[in-house]
Image 1 (tube, helix red, strand yellow):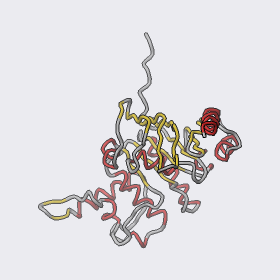
Image 2 (spheres, rainbow, N blue to C red; image 1 turned 45 degrees about the vertical axis):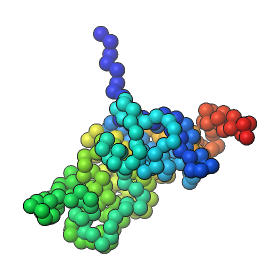
Image 3 (cartoon, rainbow, N blue to C red; image 1 turned 180 degrees about the horizontal axis):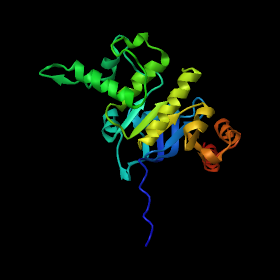
Image 4 (cartoon, helix red, strand yellow; image 1 turned 45 degrees about the horizontal axis):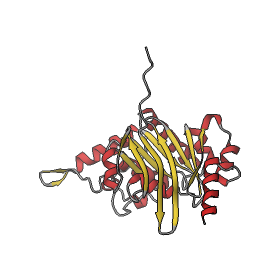
Length: 263
């Protein structure tokens, strides 16, 4: 009896391109994320990471290439398209409203109502449930988020992202502004998301974080793929070389050379 074939990736990008006028921000980029898998997206400044996040979240639709969700071709033309599929993004700046309290930020744009009025009790209960399920610690849900620490603010942003039970969470440089203890707690959170079967795309410069939680690492350089690594079998030096360009991915190098000849 033949073995059953594995399910298709949760998200699959094939030869995705994105241009801004004459600037080629992404060129033939491939990427896969499976359910219950943590994939790190790495690259130097200007490598195309932020642009790829915007493509996946529907903020900046791809100009060319294919995007599949569970093996079916989809269009991510606007943020609603990504949210409808189950893709949630937590941006580096967190995009919180400092004047609102924790509950107001978590439910911003998705407020619960009862008999025409905001159902504050239900929203507070759901916010606490979200945070308790992932061991996120914000003691008072009714204080303005402007008064919270960096780690607590991030907990609010993550709770908002998880409100709709997403199947894929994109985390853009999540530990960039966190201390050591807060970063360690965040990595525990990533592990819990994986245990729940959620796919995670972790955008990070921090090799320690990548080695700690990622299954695979995708490296971008100058808008192109420059390596796809099994994190458990790859040294930090190899990944650093791919990020800095000390070693060039053969396909990317040949494509760049062909481009130069055409010019």
